[in-house]
Length: 316
Image (cartoon, rainbow, N blue to C red; front, top):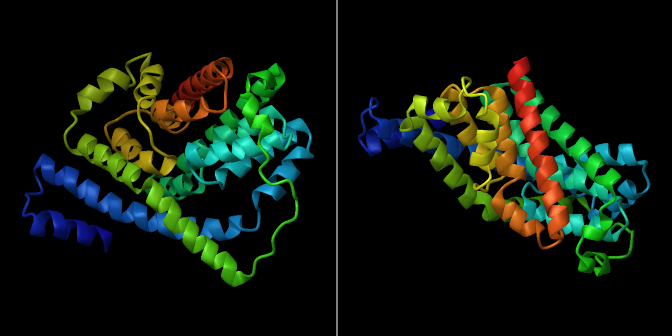
């Protein structure tokens, strides 16, 4: 049905020839826009309903009473099912720090929340299958867990902005009981709210993906970040830093890049850089991290993402 709609819009409504670059790019845009927003609406609603059983106070209590390594794993997994952009992750980051959750555990959450999420998992599975999806989940969780553990071992609590520790974001640990209707209303509201905040970024990302799909010559991308370039992975990371998107929004670009022949590790590094190392996210994080801590965070993330890229290029 989605393909029929895209065909109708591009070839009948606009009257474009299937052999043209414009038609190829526009068809990619229309088809992926319909598919991605349909998947987003359904998955966000379901996950929001599940997430209504785990409010922040309960989450903070769980993470505060676990051993460090277990806490890192739980925090990374928690990041998978939280709102999927840094704007949403930072308030919870502040709440975790204020509640006394170990800093390394908190960073495991902060890394995994924008990098890995349920929306991207569904979209990746639909586009590439379960093997690529499993690689994405495994790589993202490893970066989040070990990145958080490294930061926790370094003891950089003094490099968090002082006001973060002074914030009181709800001292009670009681959970407000909700009925089935209230949870459905919350899921409906959260779906609308998240789509309202990210729709433009997703459309921009799909547009970039469509342009790459239709217009960018294959040799241009392979020359910069292709398999013959030993610095392909660092180059992909640098290309991803100026961009801003969530994991769901960047997937159309990833799909177009893989169609152009880029290796999985290089594309994975690019995707991680866009979602967890982008310049806009660093600006947001600067509001809660001192420059020294932000520099350490950027350094650890850059090294781990590049390492993951080279690793998967070697084994795939």
